[in-house]
Length: 80
Image (cartoon, rainbow, N blue to C red; front, side, top):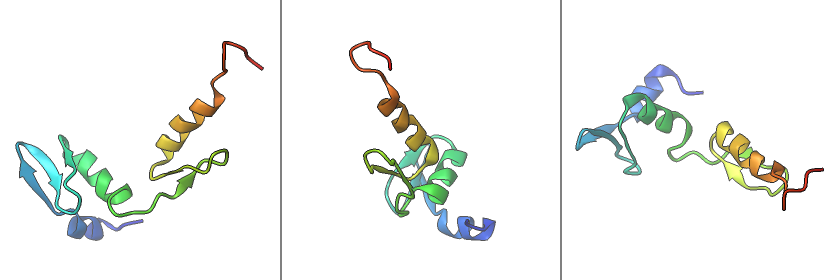
């Protein structure tokens, strides 16, 4: 996990049109807390969560959980 000092050192941004823009990848965020989450969990970080069914990888756990719901959906209206 990143320390507060490391986040501040890495959290280089520029305001572009009222948005926080990451200088590393150019992603833009309306809110500073979303930008900080991007720095902490996403920017230049390899995906660490993997679906055990199809092996797709995700950077955030909530994205894996959302993906897993796709595997759980019944097909053709038939439930098991």
